Image (cartoon, rainbow, N blue to C red; front, top):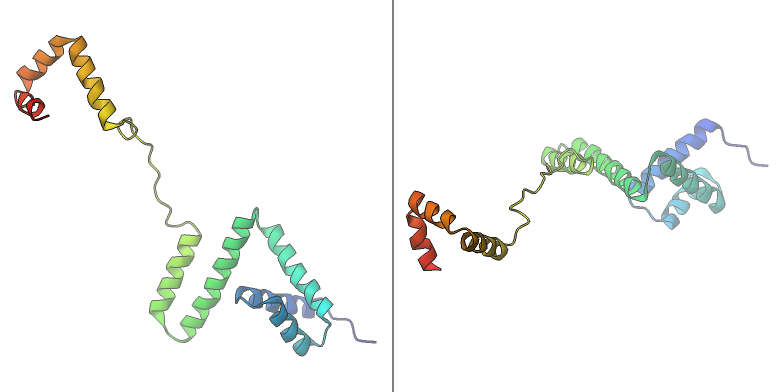
Length: 155
């Protein structure tokens, strides 16, 4: 009868399976590597994979955030590899990508002002209608800005 694995051993295996998943290994590759390395059944490896994904589900709120977490972890793994190779330019690119995934570079959202939503033709029509309804406005505008007459004649 095979010896039962300790909690420490199981945790180490789960960590390794998590790394395999972050590195993009397929289920078949994980099963093959795990079976050879640990001498356990395919079913046991599947149980380990399920434990890892269950843990991810607990840690994340939605599929999108789980995917984001996986991408961030994959980038961090890549960062460590690039750092060991002293490829600092790649490290900076990876760190920038992680920061974007973590939302550190979110665009500042501004409220659209009233002019962002108005169609230019609609605005011109409104001005013309306003001037027709109130001829005094047109006279005042002409007195204050005589160049407006030239602009209107161009249209």
